Length: 286
Length: 330
Image (cartoon, rainbow over all chains, first blue to last red; front, side, top):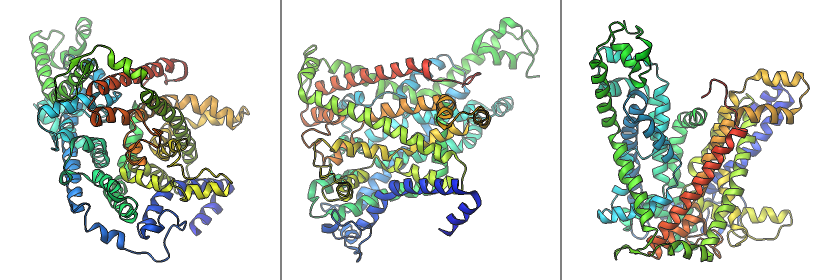
């Protein structure tokens, strides 16, 4: 508060209004997160009705309850499954999307413009139209209840948004670099791996983090393709909580909801600049 | 050495242009060299593109065609598809629950997207003023966009909008006695809309980047001419950020058509009460995977593709009237 006061004194009354406005919005935006934190230390019966954000006597029961797992499956199983899918997705997206983006940005091949237009088209494609036929395909291949349907697309550059982001970034690299590499006898593969990839780090990091978060949060994919609880991701584990005993164990559900968000929040705190700058440029250059 | 100009004729050769420039030791590069170079470029291009091409053929284009075929059949995954012509589509139009899903989704898109974008723009304009703490606020406001689509957020939303919880108590202070929104078929959709508006941070960040590029001199000149804040907003800010606005409208609209997880969890897997949160994808999921009507669900998917395609086309067509791209273009 004293910092705020100092800022106001320096900048005048306009600054006061600005900070008041920003703080009000901040309170509304953060309320659900702070509420969840407080609720996770309340007894189940008090979670809905009690208005105070934090309980007078915080209890850890909701968290110790989580160590018992959900329906006899330890919650670490869900976390490991989610982590496996999320990390696998990141590797796939970074490799396949950067290869595709390199071709669009740096190789002059016949049909490039047509394929680029198609790629942009898929960016706008609603996935509804793919849900059923992809399911039938994976069912024919006997891949239901495996992680493959959730991962394969990441290795085949179907995330057009990241291809687009990387193309924009690669086009912004100085042309002299890859021309010099070519004169030195570098083929495309070497130019891609030793010159373009290191320079693209910001775009790669942005794509990697978004991929991780999207895969971690994904609900529909696992709901469609995973049907044994020991293969469930965190999202499906949470859904099991709801199906099982929503009323009886509200506290456990809220605690698990918060724990489920921790990896996402950690990534956000560590990399927020990459995420926000990545988002910002995607809109500008579009 | 590398930038010797060739004859104009060769320059017109499109993709070969820079190649000819680089290879030509004078104006008379032997034609074989650029050709070999082109072939090498083609081979490299298609090798690099091969994951995407495979993905496009097997996971996007192929399935789309297959789904189009399925939409004219009755198919339950176990028996072979049976051709029934347009039956799925006529069934759909006669189905009150399908009409309900169209209504719910349209309502969600038409109310939620404008409010979300208006909030995003308003907050972006506030944050565009350089002040102490600006980047902290920007990060904090952006955070809900990352967690808003998760099951956790939907669970919390369900709690916050229940009977007797914070929203209910707050509205009672103002004398509104409608109870929690979650159990009320006429209100629950607004809980979902609130959840999407809560995620205004993503478009906000894009607006903010656009606002930063508006030259300050324009505002100063307008102020000298006596233009008030509203005129400055409508005559400078809006036109100058219209490309960014267009981008946000397009992406947010298409995105919100596809809502599923939030509706599913907020309604506790029921898409209710009384089908009040039966968004299009929920109904498609129910028909395809609960009732095993894969043909009907495919038809639903294709119809939505057409609808989204039309909306996109209208947006692109309309941009000529209201989107101003800078000269020298992007």
